[in-house]
Image (cartoon, rainbow over all chains, first blue to last red):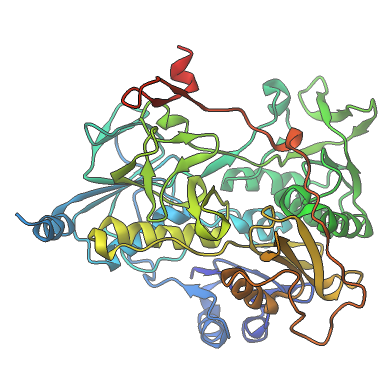
Length: 75
Length: 464
């Protein structure tokens, strides 16, 4: 699955790191590092983390791989 | 047909081309569809593959945690676009309404959004830049190459430039226990963006983490061995250092070269636009069908005396893309201004550094909360007695408070909102490096005498 965290919004509450520690890790006291493509086995936990984020900074893919753009167009 | 009819017809089956298929381009495309645009949408991008996120490239990817191809951006909705990837745009014909591609193809449009971003500034000597072990970091491929070089356990990494990217890379090197030297022309890291006081904090932080930090020096030459591997760097003070990896982190170059003959107000400083993201032409007149968003846009900000400001910030790219998309499919009276206060973050040496506002738009700075020695504090920046920016170290929860102070032109120095006011907080001069370090060449000249003849001409055309 794909996620992105708006780190300009993130205030380091670390709820995500508690709920989905394989996808979200704290670096120092309040900086967040995350895996932008966590394993699908993590899905439930990541969705819970996204829902629990106090500033709603976690965006989860809404397409679920419905669309894959062409790699390059024929010229 | 009335204007409303024309707009309806355009929203139904008009042609929109987005040049630049990264964060701003993708979010604009999604916003256009969300706004009800059902016409044809074409995404032009010089890189192959799906739009991906760049901030992780200098962080999670370099630590080896996340693979370089694992940062594809999540989608907000299906954009139903034609993707023309792997070929850069080479020209914009504003009279004929076509974008030209480097392979000769022409893509017609009714409205176009330019979101071509920036590329990494390469090392200035081409043969030295080509040495094995010399890197820049902007694309997925760059990050992948550098990650591999770091994983191989280099004897020493030289980072050239102690801005945000260079400092983040130095931080990763220390995290991976790799010896690292950072060379910076200015007196301290981050000083060009955040001033001398924060620069000093950043320098202490780097040294405390074992970085061999050398400020006020210039790297003059990168020396390779017989096999073309980097082995040594030479400084302008005559000293040298042995390193097998060098990372050139000297900022970006805005991708405006392809617009040289377009008649737009485009140059090394970006593409000038109004707050509605409409591009200005070379005379400073507003255009109707050309829009700009992201790192390449240079947009006036009323808070900062309407100065034109370009920002290489993630949140700015997203917000500006959404405003541009809205305005592309809206009538004049319904248009939005892009009026956000800049927000920025950097993660390095265990610290979460965030800024709000424009710290370079300041004459004084004061620590308002917390403790600098604990590296947990907020510093506020002021310009002529009002708050214009704030920077936090491990204190992000307070930044929104300072955003409100900036938006309301609150007096500087501001009151401390918490009980942890530092005892000796006195404003000090902000002290940015002088113009010699940051000056860039002029790009236009004004010609003609009579008001009907006066025009702005780009220097390139003028000298032809």
